Image (cartoon, rainbow, N blue to C red):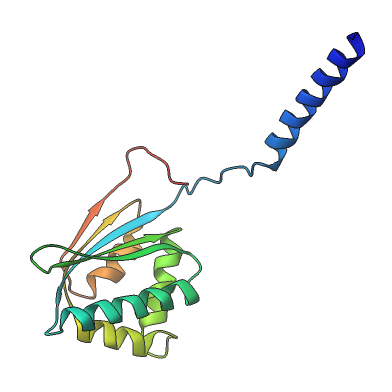
Length: 153
């Protein structure tokens, strides 16, 4: 009887250790940047906006691995908000290069601008002055919020 209790105890302890080992360690994204892009449809129908949004988010998923999330949302008054989550500032610079002339998303970004008028952009996260200077060259209303505390995973 003692042997059964000992064997059962060892088996339980071993199975608990195995479960913990199989659970992956959570990686925190210490430098995540979130942006909210406030937009208005550019003389396009709801279907045209929906179809293009689906197409464009799939292109982002395919071509930009350091983009963590890319979501188009519509309000009741037909305003569009694009929520972008980037691994870090470098991922945003990569996106800017991709949509620039001769970038892999240049033509797609042209279509993006045919579908949407960007009203403003708000960035959440710690960004360098170099980044802010680059964004200011586009002439869009831009607001920045710096991190106080928090985490992403």
